Length: 495
Image (tube, rainbow, N blue to C red; front, side):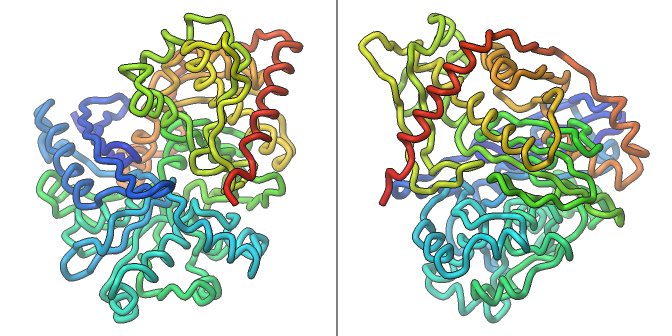
């Protein structure tokens, strides 16, 4: 059996999955890494730990099904986007922990940049507003706060990357410093039209261009891997995690959309070769670029906290022992009891983009119990998705007819039904819900001829279950009004 390896370097864990030609999982291994919180709003990862875990999960996935190197036709990488790391090109050692996409330490810098330059300047060039979310200001913080780093950067000794670049660098023995267009589009440093680093932005932010990786397409043979678990295997695919899920769901036509329910929640709408500026709080981003073909673009709505809110309920409050227990607990009550949970732990993302917001639980009475809180936690994901969908329909001028969903939370049937009720469109779960890793495998396999074309990939896609909207309009309206009241109470919490 011939297989494609997919390395999925995510926010909470790293996985290696081997897929066969039908897009089915042959073998999988996963390992979590530490979430480091030095101060309120600071979120870090240890890049060395992640690099070590990456090699371990590749080896474990191979060993568990006795997969030989000769069976592995190619390898693709997908990764948590925006998470920023800078390392020394001679030693390979990071100068500091990776600053995770959720990290908000650059809030003051974002506010100052908003006043001096304004988001319109960055939106026009990069499709992104000024926010703590993206890599640009994280790079600035590292350059300004890590002793000796700026000097090394100016001398060409320091290398920046999101986790795709860091992973590639280690898998290739430090010989390849690259990224793909999807990850580059999340740094706020790449021009969407030219697909090159924007030197005006680099000069404005005082970021040396020598730090930055070479931008490549999402699907091409970059090199052969030198690291032992995959020695000699072609490295031929790189996609940011949400773009990878779009590819894994085979949303190749303009107007097709997917929503991934993971640590955060990310809806992407394919807009084809057209760059669609957003006027309703969404992001314009690169969806993928296969080989020398023109880039395909997307509108994206990013929600920071969804699955991680369930983890917070488990780890910080101890209300549940396992994440899967939340559905059982939520089913002990008929509704949310009037309680609404806005999980603005890192501010509000799309479509509000308010870094001053903070999390609130609103509408509490003595009637509310832990079942109602569990239900409010799940419903928060559906409400945030509805906010994004409304903005997306306004920007793109289309009405969504159905929504393809994937990610760890889609096994939660209570959530999926509530989501269909809120959106008033069918919600469709595919047979293969590991679409992020599958998208990376597809990118790698297309580049090496393992799969011939996009039509062959579409034949692999199959529907597992579909949820139809069934809530009466009055109840739905009441839910939406309660959510908007809660949103207002979360705003402007931080000075």
